[in-house]
Image 1 (tube, helix red, strand yellow):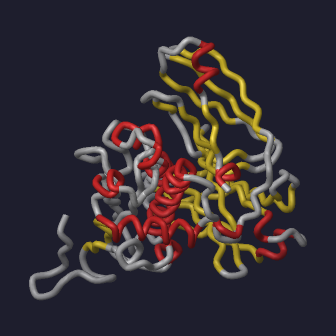
Image 2 (cartoon, one colour):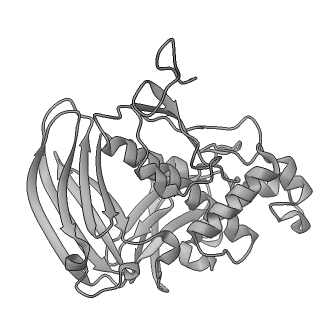
Length: 347
């Protein structure tokens, strides 16, 4: 996918398709994705390590559980420079992880958030931008890379986050200065009619403001459907203690997204009590989770290659989330092996 614009000159931000690496190689902050423009972003990406269970396949010894150990460096596509970039970005964007395992998990959230930010920015910019392709999908061996699935087939946060970001309808909240803007993007070929609901709440789930309206979006279009002064939405609540939930319902489908008023590092994430229950499903189990407070990036894992249909999701207070997983584990083994990790635990 080498970028091309015309015979006599290269591509740029208004001609042809573009490979964009100022975020990552250029060391610019992730929020730069929201400002950069192109007719077609045909390549961009962000690195992560495989998850801990995958890393243990080629680095089983505890003394190697450091991103700069010899074995970890041997399984890094971009060498020392790439490891340093991952660490720098993570510490700039998030709080310091407590150990190696937490670092790997947070690196997945970092990569997922970065690519989600890019995809949504590009789609919001329709029709100026009409294409976005991230690098890359998979790996040819166990390695730290830009892939969204590791060599063993385990989905990273990036893979889970890209799916709703590329859905046929996207509702995308973005805090820009003192204004909250919400854009609705439709790739459908027919006019879309539905109901928009914007809910601002604090981390405990207390309602700060709410707005509901019916609206129409044209085919293949991006439309700003909501703008409001942030201070008027928060009613005295600190920005780092609030979230916005944007939902659009049409034809029986609900599209939802969560936005923030500060960077991930600034979020004051509270201690939370996650409750969960397990029930049988056709090919395994379904697990239903709920929380008394907001929880960021809940990651469900077992020791094997079992695939959860959704993962790294946020939990909104009072709203349950049900996820299926295909597995042959017995119920007792499932309960014993299930691990639930979230961002609050990594500090």
